[in-house]
Length: 381
Image 1: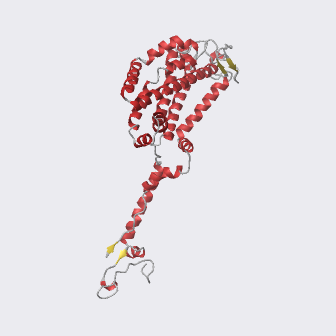
Image 2: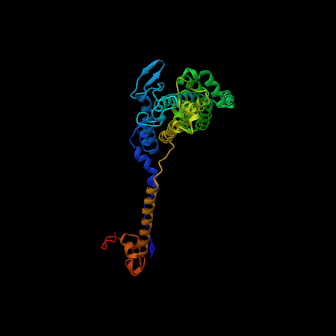
């Protein structure tokens, strides 16, 4: 008696490997990016929180930029000095409390958040633009172009950022947050440039670059249309890290007195101005510190979500619950197939048992071909 097994059922891993293709079938690149991003719960939550922080900061105390003044809905301004209520403790009239002079800390923190966000965005844009351009040129052309750009990058890296920031802040801090962010961005691109260079050195050897070159594509098209989209994951993540580092650097510079200066303010300057009241009025530190942490964490989580959305090499990993469920289904199927193979009568009903004895082969000599027991007893099929 010979046992013939049917083809095994598809494994759960086969379905997992085709899951991404099935979900993005018929979608454009923009729709795929949005679908992947909104599937990242941490990134979506962080984006909502960051949007709420931005709206709160810019609508509460209004906007004051380059002489343009748009009032907000909050009753106090960051440079007003109302009477001190209840010793400056948090109250319904002043939810974040007041400093020793009488400034409303809510208005001051909102203005500081505006300035810190402005510096963060400007540093991110300027640093990312310079880093991407120099890194891509260095990694793509190599040779003397690579040597020249990388030696210039090494010179900038050897300058401690805190010292360079202190010199920049002392010279440009009194000109406002926008000018300070612009100058800081000119010195914050080095790390991103080296990472982009490494990605381009790897990607320029791929087959799709050779195919584009054979098709007659120019160097600019190969760089910005073929290689750069494949390096977008590294660029996005490190740009968000650059922005998060920028707000921390601005906080440190303002705390040391080299960042944004009075009569304007920033989150670091709020902490610096109230450092002597740490024992008596700790809430003067809680609120600016809390907003610094929230902004930095939100930027990092959003960067992770964008990396997963833009990087074509990222694959969707099933959840632990789904993996356990699929493993249980596969184990049950294996047990069921084992029981069927142990039961000749049940296995024969599914056409898996062949009896080659002469008595059942159609004649005494066994010249007839064996009969396969199937679902139909009359035909054996």
